[in-house]
Every structure is written in structure tokens, then in C-alpha cells.
Amino acid sequence: MQILSNNFLTIKNTYIIPLIGHNPSGRYDMTYYKVKNIIKNHTKRIQNTGKNHYLIELSKDYFYKALFNEIVQFYLKMTLQYNDLINIEKMVTKSWLLVTDYYKFFYSICCLFRMMHRGYIFIEPSLSKEISHIFTALTGTPIQFNSGTYFFIVTKTVGNDITIDLNVAAGSVHESSWNKFYLELIQMEKQSDSDEKVVLAKIKKVFSTYNSIFPSQLRNDVNYKGEYIYKEIDKDFFYNIANNDIDNIGRIILKSEIIDNLNSKNKFLNLIGMYFYNLTQELFNEIVNRSGKIYYHHKCLKNKMILLSS
Image 1: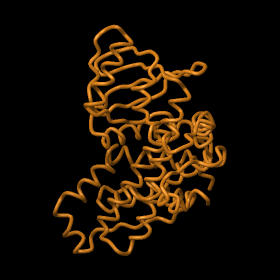
Image 2: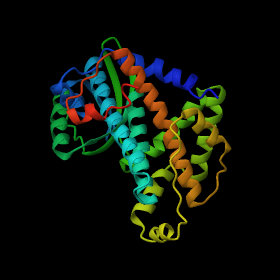
Image 3: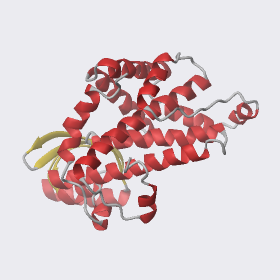
Image 4: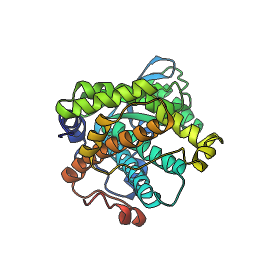
């Protein structure tokens, strides 16, 4: 089974390769280069297209450095969650395994979004005031830039500049991320082929059967609803960690029946999470192999980067 095919190549060629050569190089860079900082400090032109909806022109180099930096940060988060997962598997309850695995999956899609030049950012009230002043000065008309969660996506690249569409999110960052992930899943299936297309079609069917935000709902139910403790005690709650091999994961996904019960949802949460963890890891390896040394300023993180050198 050949899982990483045309979808993988499309993401690599369209989004990963343009980022090469834009990696931050020092501790200050890793702190400074964030998408929201670039919006605040390096906006060239701004067009207000509706309430909490903007088209923003930025320097491509500044923006790509921010994307690169945030890709690394989300990669570290997903990797540390995976390390925790395999180290605590036999030491904690099944519900805590699920919560840990959920965050590995969530950080994987956040990293994947950044790799695809899009994602969610949160603008704090103090930062929103600063941006309001800057946008007002740039346009010559009063602009009230509100705080909250926003989704950005690159819409145009011309020379050394890029334009992003920045729009306020309708719900929480988790709920919004899973809804957006489902839409991206539809596109990924369209641009895939062979075994990859069959597996992505099955994953899309899982989400359409359970609903697009089922990972977040499952995490919330297990984490916050007290009655789930009885399922743990009665051993009616199963959560197993799949082998970390994307081809094998693809085979299991195709063989697994979609059943509307807790343990079936648990199984697919882990399997699909591992699939996209591996996809994101392979894309990150492309960045590492093409960029050379990537700067990490925390010794503890350097020691834990067991997947970077593999």
C-alpha cells in the first residue's frame, strides 16, 4: 500500500518548498516571528471587506518566517504529545490516553494548517487596540479591530508580497479547527490518487458519519462528563494506540467498520490522528532536509527531538 502519493506531493510542492530559505535563525527570531506580530508590525496595505474581515498585504519574507516558526512550534507540541502517549500508555486510564492522543491529533492539524499557509490565531484585547490604531493610520479611516479568534489564509502572492484573507472565526478555536479540517479533508481527497485516495475517502466518511467536530466532542465528553468513570471501572471503555506506520494505519482504517458507539469513535480518533501525525511528520522532514539546521533555543527541546534525526 502506497499512502503518501499525490496529495502529499501537492502539499509539498505548493506550500512546503516556497518556505525553504525563510527559517528564523536565532532566539529573538523564534520569539518575534509570529503571524499576529507580522500583521501588527509589517502590514503594507489593508482593505476592510466587512465586519471583522480584512485583506492584508504583507512582506512575503516576514510572513514566511512567521509560518516557519509556528510550524516548528506546533511540530514540537505534537511530538511531545506523542512521546507522552507512548510513555504513559500502560500507566494511566484509557480516558487520559484519549485526551493526550486528542491533543497530538489537534496539534498535528494545527501544524498542517500552517504548512498550508493558513490557520487560526487569537488576538488579545491589548493587541487588537494596537492593530486598530495601525490600520486606522494606514487607511485614513477609523477601523475597530476586535479581539478574538481569526482564520487567515494566503490568497495571492506577487513578487515579494503576499495577501492574506483574515476573518473572525465563528466558534471556539477547537470547534472551528475541526470544521475547517473537514473542508480541507474534502480537498485532500480530490487531489489524491491510488491508495491515498481510498484511505482519505474512508476518513471523510468517518467524519461525515459522526460529524465534523466529533474529536472535540469526544474529548469533552470523556474529560468532563463524570459518568464516563463507570465505563472505565466496568472496563467498557477501550483505547488502544496504533502502531506508528502510516501504511499499516491505512490498512486498518479501510478494514474498520464505522459503528455509532463510543469505542468505535475512540478507535477512529486514534487511527486518523496517527495518519495525520505521520503525514505532518513526513512534510516536516521535507522542511528539515531542505533547510538544513533549524534553530531551537531550549536545551530540553533539543534533547527530546528524537524524530528530527530519524
